[in-house]
Image (cartoon, rainbow over all chains, first blue to last red; front, side):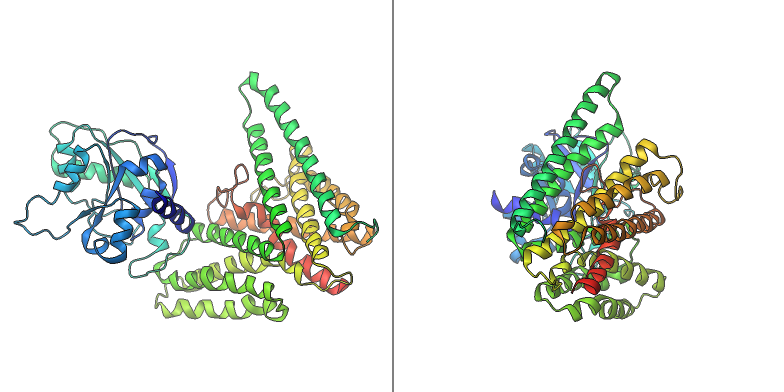
Length: 198
Length: 318
């Protein structure tokens, strides 16, 4: 209870993480927030920008290789309730999206970064297919595009101390669902929704 | 001086006066809003009320920090500098190669500059950023190896630090002055004198401009600055400054002269920083103070008035 509040407050002091609800309002609906990924602070910034009640039911999906061990793991598990994902899954180990699907099935919203890796640039790279699979399996979940601004300037790749800029977190309108849309078209459209806010 | 009150009593009187002023302002704002409500309200009046509410908060924070003493006063201005610098850098396009210089600005230069005030080391306070800060920033940036737009990038960071840290730190540096009538309270009242004159000058120029403004001074830089606003608001602020002479080491006439210095330099600050803001493509520096914009929108005039006021005081009254 105390640690999450402290993390959210600290994040806001350090990198701003000011929410801008452009296309939707905060809501308890089942949501998949998907955002561009430019720095290690993205996960914290997006999560901290949510109102406190939503922070309790929204789980950031974090890379196991970065967040999965040591102090960072403590922070991720006890602090912001992260779900770990294996970025280089063993082909025989089963479905890497299984923990995400379980969380959605329990009614928990997710924060994901469909590019899969950080890139210090203004616009996101092409998306990997995880978002498509989640969207197909959970047709009722709202897909909320989120644009994170300035974080790549606050903490460029290879640096460990953030410059305390005012970073903004823009929430767009939930992505319209189309039946029988091809994977590539869907991912392109999802990416465009973020680019449109940049 | 003059009235025989202690600085503590003067401080409370002053706060009572400012409180009364804000009650009057809030009442006027409330009446205006009620009158405008049947016509669907007015954006100007809503903004006015937001500004008045923000003033309550700012006055409360300032009063509390002054009451707590020297350290909190210095820390308060240090925090204000951080927010102002943050707004400045956020609006300035930066590249990954600017990371080290920016880290140095936020994590080393701001604490060092304010620590020098706390420590009372005037000699280093006055040259630390203009000499060592100025020289170290291009070195740190060169070490990144990125030469694209080097001069533009390093100049913007130097400019930001000098305005938001060096210049603003001159307000709490008034605590350093060894006035003839020396006491901490006396120096704090000098800071309050500066802030009252500079902020009332801004407010009154805005009010006079809204009521009588016809001729814009620099329409492309700041359409709200008018000749009528500047003259009316400026003269009123000088009159108020003169009336507050007993807070200061000045005679009434000297206080009017000092207020005139503050009004003029404050006006120049607002003008120059408006131009800087426009060149960065923004209308406000930020959004942290409701109705006012950012921290730097409130401190733009202070950043120019404080160093000049400090040095004029230091030359004539110590």
